[in-house]
Structures are given as structure tokens and as C-alpha cells.
Image (cartoon, rainbow over all chains, first blue to last red):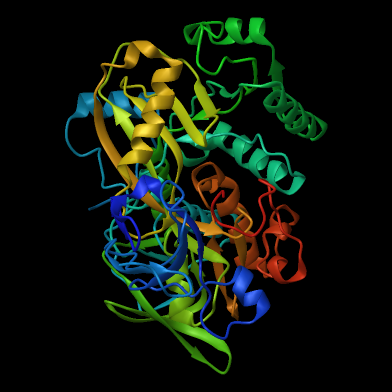
Length: 81
Length: 425
């Protein structure tokens, strides 16, 4: 994984982006949201920020075993691309 | 394989040289997988092998197996930067790592295998007065616990590490350092091989190419493990699978406060002696480089985590660039030296940066995990303490703080003071 495709800026090098956190499973309680992780070899859902570009907050779905980016869009929906 | 493991000594090696064949034996293995054990340890890395060794040696547990998916030492014990130290701020951490450092000092004798412990010193470089006062605080905490360390001003640093030329004009001038002289390096592969050999000689079955795929339970207790070579009954099961403990949690249906991240390391082509100690250089703009020189002459370097969850073992190239940038900032003369190898290991990153040695879900299932990027130096203490927990059912004082319930009770061991995040933000 060397690039992310920002919905505003298009494909950019990974160094422009900052990983923020892994998102908890839907319906997780407060403790689980902060501390617990359910590890999956196939899917990791994360918040990233395009700090070196549009500074938009991104919802990224990735496969952590292959590094493939399944989906990258703006948090809360929207975005140009 | 035939005959018992010979005891190595200068005399025995000389005799072996003169007598020709017949002396050397495979260091471990050669025994079949049995269908029942007192303790099954999952993972033949440093922590798993050390746990098995101490179970057999200190607690007289007769039937111990270490089951390994790949090869002995294939994981992080063979992928790290070989640094050992105990320069931690929090008492729970520095007492534990100091216990480990003391064991490193005598490990070659204890295992009858040369692990090449080299107390060449570990030096944290300070680039500002703030850095220096943080180091003074950490150093004072260590000295109160009776652990060696010294705060060095520029003149003292120049005496300790003249090759660094601390006064040289740099983008980020060095103002001082914290040194732990007993810290240093240990030959990482020898640690895995030495523990495997010593455990095997005590009767531990080390089974490679045997992946554990599930845990079988009955009436709230574990009865054994499912493996790619069939079912193995076990009185107790220990998961020492750091780097993949998140997957163990998923397998058992127990969410863990662990994320899996990559940490990479790299080594240069061999060069003439340049650096006699271990330097840790954290420079403004989030960069970090730790660097030492192996006995073969290669510069061994590492830095920050890659920064996001991954199992790829690839390592991002801009991180490599950043680590090398720091190294060249320290030693401009290595600018033309080539990188020989780069690799990445998967790390169990806990939500407070400290490990977990505790029961996991069942009374007879244990986990030795969450070593973040500091697992190698912990191996001797972790093995001894984990074995005591498994054998007696009670955690020794040394690891009481590493319990899993600390996240729920709020007794976090947050050495970094960074909050409940696996990576620095």
C-alpha cells in the first residue's frame, strides 16, 4: 500500500495521509469502542485524514493482509469523486 | 538424530574438532507430536520457547509441547533490532525489564549457548532542554529503583561516544544524553536457537509446521487444541503468538485491546567499525532512528511503526527513508552506504503500550502477548514469569500489572502518556 485515492484530490502518496483510528464494530459499547478490537485478516475500517492535502477526514476500508484499499470516501458521505 | 545433546564448553568443542564427526546433534526436535500434554505452548518464538524452558526447568512440568505454525524463530524473535535495555519510567515496567536485563547477563551460561550479550550501552540522545529534563526524570526514576543509568552532558557524551562527534554542527544540535551502560544487544537468532535447544534437552517437544487452528472446550475449561496435525489434548494452553494475538482473540471470540501494526528494520552492507554503542535519536517532525552496528559490520536501524494496522510484513518506503535520514543526520559519512536488507514484523500493539500476561477467557488458557515493539528484550523475564503463572496459577508480583483486566479497571500502564491509542498521533 503506497497510495490512497482521496475523493477530492485523487491518488496521492501515502505520506500525505495520517491514520487516526480503527473504527469499532457497529453497536459496540463505550468500553469496547475505546479499548477492544475484533481483528480480521480481511477487513479494517479506519479514519484517516488527508493532512498533506485537502485535510478532509476519510473513511477507509482496507484489507490488512494484502494492503488493498477497498474503499476510501469522505466521513459522513459526500465528496467530489 | 541420536544421543543426548552434548554440553558445550571450550574443551568439548576442541575435542569435537579433533574427533571429527559424531559430536554435533540437531539443536531441537526429532520427537513426534504426542496426543496429550500437561502444557501446550502455541508459538515457538522467544516468549513461547522461554516459557516452555522455564516450565520444564523451574517447575518440573513433564509433558510440554511448543507448537509452531512455521519454523522456530521465524517470527519477531528473528526480525528485531536485537536491543536490550531497562530504561523505562514506570516502576511496573522498569522492575520487569530490569529483571529481564539481569537474566540476559547470565543467559549464555543458563542455556549453555552463546547468545552474544553485548553490554555496549544504550544512549538516548537529547536535542533540547525539554528532552533532557524528560530524560532526567526517567533516569531518576530508574536510579531510585537501583537501575544503572547516567545523564550525560555534551562533554561526557563526547567521552562516551567520540565517533558521534556530538558537537558537530547539525540541523538539530545534540545537547546531552541518557545512557544505560548495561543495555546493549543480543544475537537474536541465537536466543531462539538457545532456548529451543535447552528446552528440547529438558524433554520439551518442539513441533514445527503445526498450526493451531482452534481451541476445544468442555464445561467452561479448555481440553485441547485443534491443529493441522490433528487434535492435541492439553491440561493448560499458553498462547505466545505476539504479532498475531489479535487473530487468537478472533479465534476464541474474545475481543482484545490489541491492534496489529508493522514495525520495520533494516541493515546496511557491512562497513568497518563505526559505532560501538546503540544510539536512539528522536528528531523533530516525528522521526526516529535507532542504530547500532552488528558484529558483522552492518548498521542495524529501526524507527517508528508504519502507523496503521497491517499484516502484510511489507513496510512503507517513506518510513525507511525517514529512518535512514536520521542515521545520515547522525553520521553524514554513511550517505553512500547501501541498504542490504529491509524487513517488517507484525506487532501486537496494546491500547496502553504495555504487555499482557494473564488468563484468557478460561481458567486453564493463558496469553503472553501485547509486546508492542519491545518484546525481544523482555523474553527471559517473560518466560520465567509466564511459566510461574501457568505452573502455579498465581501471577508473580513482577507481572501483576500486566493483567488483562487493567483496561476495564483503569490501571493502565501508559509509559508514553499518550492515551488509549496503539500509535502516536
